[in-house]
Amino acid sequence: ERTACMKKVLICKESDALETRVAMVPADIKKLIGMGFSFKVVSGAGLKSGFLDEAYKEAGAEIVASNEAGYTDSEIVVRILKPESTEGLKKDTLHLSYLDPFNEKELLNKFASDGIQAVSLEMIPRTTLAQKMDVQSSQASLAGYVAVLNAAAKLPKIFPMMMTPAGTISPAKVFIIGVGVAGLQAIATAKRLGARVDAFDTRPVVEEQVRSLGANFVKIDLGEMGQTEQGYAKELTAEQIAKQQEAQAKVCEKANVVITTAKVFGRKAPVLIKKDVLDRMQPGAIVVDMAVSTGGNVEGSKLFENVVTKNGVTIMSGDMLERQVAFDASLMLSGNISAFLTHFHDKEKNELVVNLEDEIMKGCLLTQNGKIIHERFI
Image 1 (cartoon, one colour):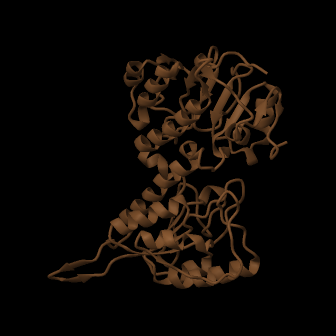
Image 2 (cartoon, helix red, strand yellow):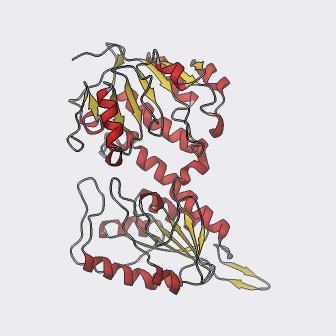
Image 3 (cartoon, helix red, strand yellow):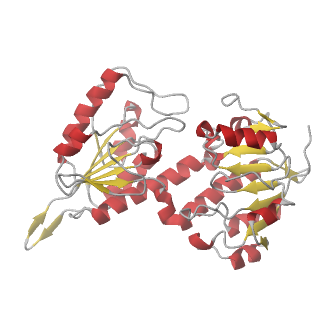
C-alpha cells in the first residue's frame, strides 16, 4: 500500500526546557539533501547544542517559525522527545522520536486514530545491521562518560594517585555496577582519570570486556545466569538479588564513587543499593544513580537532584546526562537518525519507503493505517 511520496523532512524544536539536544545537525542534513530529501528546521532548534539557524541554511534547509508551521507540508517529522500533542500532524506522516511506548498507551492510540505512522526510536532492534541507528547506545555511552566527570567534580578527593613531597595520595576507588554501554564508557573514563576501578554485572560474559579496559571484575556467584536474545541481563530471583546485594555492599563500603547503570527499557529499574548499604559507606562518597528516571537503582535517589545522606554520602541524579554534552549527543543522535533515513531511502523512487518487510521497520513502527500494528502494544 503506497502512502504519499516521502522526502520532505521537518526537524522540530524540542519543547521541554531541559532538553539541550537537537535531532539532526547541519552536516547530516547536507548529505541527505544530496540524496534527494528536503529539509525544514524550526528556528532555534539547534541553539542549545551549538548549531545555529545560519548553519542549517547553509546546509540547504529552510528555516520555519514553529513546529506547527512545519507540519503542514512535511511527510517525515523528526524530534527527540515524544510530542505533547499530535495536533497539526498530517495523516500518513512518518513521525520519528523517543516515545516511551510502554508507558504511553494514550499517545499511541492518538497516533493511530490520527492515521500517523509513529516510529519509536528506542524500539529499533539491537541487531548488527541496526547498530548505527541505535539511539539508546549512542546516548548511553556519553552518559557513562558524564557520570564519571560529575562524580569526579563533586568528590572531595582526586581520582589519580599522586606522589608529592607532602606525601602520596592514593587513587580513588570507583565501583561500576552494570556493564552495558554506559558502564563500559564509565569504566574507561574512570581509568583514564587514574582511578582504581571495580565492575560487576550479572552476565559473566562481560568479564573479558571489563578486564580489557584495565578494571577488576567482581565475581559474585549467583548460580544460573544469562542474557536475553537482545543482549540484556535476565531478571534475577529474590535469592540471587539478596546474594548480589550483600556482595556489592562489601565493595561499596570501600568505594569513593559508585555508579549504577541498571536501567531496563520498559520496566522499573531494580533497586541495587538500599539505605543500609549507604549507611555503611564512607562520608564524602558519591553514588551516581543512572536509572533514577525509571524508579532508581539507589534507595532515596531523586530525579535532577542531589541527595546527601545523614552519614555524608551524596546520591547524584544520573539521568539524561547526555544533555550535558549536547553538541556531541546531537551529532550522535543525528548520525543514528541519518542512518535510519538512508537505510529506507529507495534510490529508484528517490524517496523514503516504509517497508514493513524490513526487520528494522517492523521492530520500531508502532502505528499505521489508523491502528496500533506492533505486536507488543496491541
